[in-house]
Length: 190
Image (tube, rainbow, N blue to C red; front, side, top):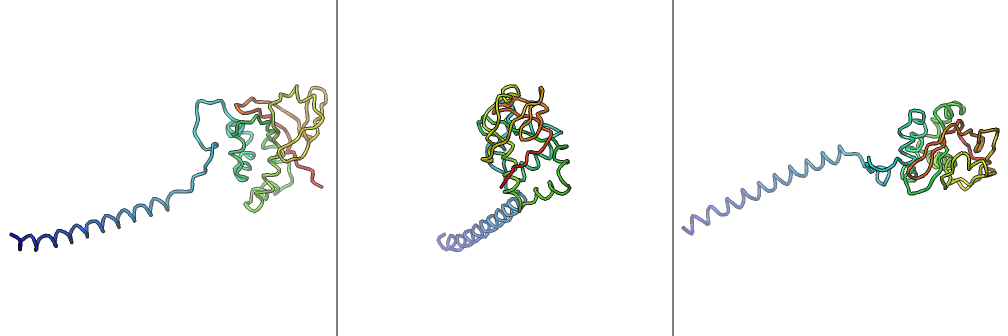
């Protein structure tokens, strides 16, 4: 009986060892395939699905057919998480037509990865802390932007212009307000 066990135990051990090695190789191959197929996920609050909260300023921009260029710029500058924070934030959101009015090639050039910082600076020039409606903005002479620069506020009749851009509409958001504007507000740098 002992000689029988001595003969069979090494054989069972060898079969078990080979079986584990094959399973381990299969698992390694599968995990490699899965990892290669997955793209690195963007992280942060902007990428959490939330269908019950009031839309953020970013949600409003993403939901607007008139702001696809702005959304592309926000994504290229990787500012999504900034626009979903608690705020309150005022975003002066240029329409697609406002971006189209820039000199030819400007938008395409700004969307290049090597211009990410410049694009982010321009976009931050469209954001101000606070949640002021158009009527309240009439009381201001200047607004401090997230770019650390000020922009003038002008009132012409019932119209309000911020940095030379006319406010066309205002949409309240869960973390602020979106003012749709007819012009890209370019920072004046010395």
